[in-house]
Structure formats: C-alpha cells, structure tokens
Image 1 (cartoon, helix red, strand yellow):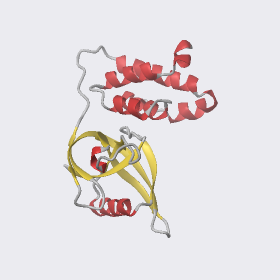
Image 2 (spheres, rainbow, N blue to C red):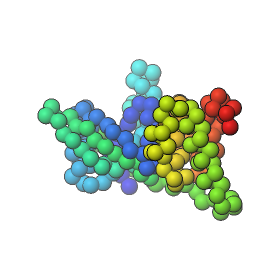
Image 3 (cartoon, one colour):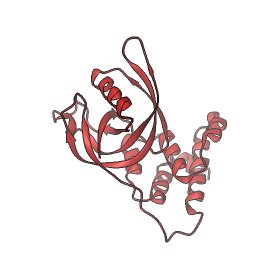
Length: 200
C-alpha cells in the first residue's frame, strides 16, 4: 500500500496511542487535505538525522519503519493551519519512497507482531503490570492520572508505557521494531531507569 508520510523528529508513534499534532507547513496542509479527501491513514516515521547533521536527501534521513496514523479529529484555524488528533495503528516497513507530491510518500508493507504460541498464559499480562508499576514509581506526582489512563490490554500497555518512559527516540524505535509483544515488553522493562527497578 502507498501512504503519505509525516516525518517527525524524535517521535515514535505506537499502536493505540493518541497524539495531537499541529499542521502548519504547506506540504503537510496538502497531506492533511489529501487524507481528509481519501479517508485513508498516513504514516508517522522518525527523522533520524536533521538537515544540520547530514547533507543526504530527506528520504534518506528518515526511518524505514513507522506506524499508520488514523485521523480522529481536525480543527482548522483561520490562518490555514490545523490542530489534529491521530491514533496509532499498524506498524509498517517502507519498501520505496516517492517524491511526486509536495510531501514524502512511500510504498509500505504492514508488519504485524509475530505470534508466541510457546509462552504460558498470562506472561504478557504480568510483564505489562510490572511495566505499569515501574512507571508509577517513576512518576509519583502523576500516579493517579497514569493509573486512570492505563489500558488493560498488554499491547496497548506496552504502547502507553513506551510513550511515557524517559528513554531516547532510538530506544522507542527499538521497542517498536521488536518481533513479538513479549519482546517489546521485555525490552521496555530493561529500559526502565535503574532507580525504579531497585524499588521492585
């Protein structure tokens, strides 16, 4: 499938995560108009290198792994900009970039998580509860809000925690690229700051 791309610096979108975006550049105003007309999702990919760090073409400075973004709401402003709300969908891999529109687009292949038939029941649920507990210890002042917002589904919990943990964008992308859900949960547990682990 071919999708428009909205590259963002230092941001990795996870499945099920709601994200507000401010659309102000002309090319992304065009992208938004195209997405609204088609009703199809677009892709969020991370800008790996900024223009100040590399002279390579833009399409060579963005990740080849991303997440589909589904438009939930769009609020236009008088100056032509918009505030939108998106939700993360399926993970994908970029097969080829296209430069025939004002914005970057790509042929992508959906990349679902692999099944884990050998794991005993409840392992993912246990790991997700451990992740939430660590996140609560890291943010005691926001514990009630985090607890109220936390999903029960382990996949969504992994997304929720990955978006809130104080880790690098590269580490978030490593989590997005994990082969299985349990791999993602396990990696996120290793990324929990040491001080929170000591409280386990």
